[in-house]
Image 1 (tube, rainbow, N blue to C red):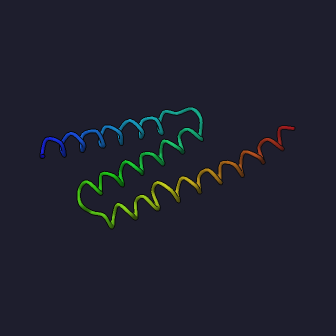
Image 2: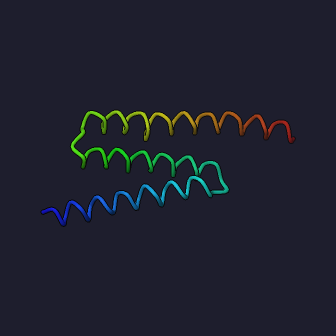
Length: 87
């Protein structure tokens, strides 16, 4: 049982690191925003594995969903204004 939990924990931590690196080194802003949201999902899953469901729910709601949605809305609103200026 401990081996399975350790393996699952390792997979989650590797997922956090990979998606965080994608968010940092991505050239496109939308890709970085989505990778940041996936990182928040992995962090919420890690909290769930660590038996902290209240923190996991808060992280999933704020870190993975709300922050990602706000960043995407801000990106869409600023992209339209930049496109209008170029025309």
